[in-house]
Length: 114
Length: 113
Image 1 (cartoon, each protein chain N blue to C red):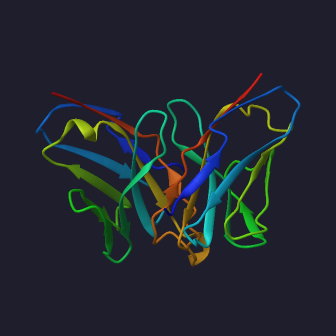
Image 2: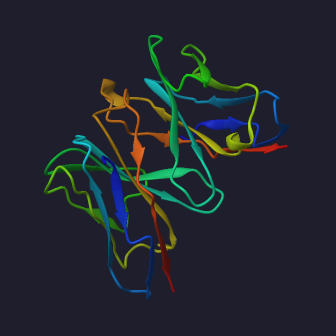
C-alpha cells in the first residue's frame, strides 16, 4: 500500500522552514526521500534505515519513527532551488529481505517564492 | 563520467505496436529498476532486477517485459497488451538493496496514439 504524504502542497517565502511527513501502514526497513523538478528525474536526498542509520546530504535533515512507521523531512532556511515535488519511498523488505523495492507516496509540491 | 542513460528522451508510437525503452548504467550497480510516472502522481514500480539473468515483477508489471542479459543494461518492452502505455518511464540503479540510494536516469516520455 502506498505511503501517505502530508501536506500535499506547501508555499514558502525564501528563508522559511517546512516539514514534510510520510506515513506507512507497514513495518519499514528503510525510507528514501527524493526531490523531482518538473520533467526531470528524481534526485536523492536522504535514506533512513531501521536501526537509526542515515545517509544523505549535509543540508537536509530527516527523522524516522520505526514504531509509528513515520518519517519527516525538515527543510530549513529554504532557498528558491528547493522548489519541486518531494517524494518518500518506503521499503518494507517483505519476507525479511530488502531488494530495494520502493513504494512511493503521491508527492508534496513545495514552492518557494522570493 | 559515471551515470545512467535512457534513450530516447521522447518516443511516439501507434497503438498496437510494441516498443522497447533503453536503460544503460556504468556505475557497476547490481540492482536496476523500472518505474512509471503518470501526471501528478508518484512513481510505480514495474520490474526490478538484483542480478544478471534474474528479475522480478513489481506492482504494475502487466503489459510489460524486461531482460537483464548484461549487468549494465535493463531494457523495458512496452507491449500492445499494456492498456494505457502513455507515461513518463524512469530507470534507476543502486548498489544493491534498500539500504542504498537509487540513481535515476533522465527518463523517456512515451506517447501512444
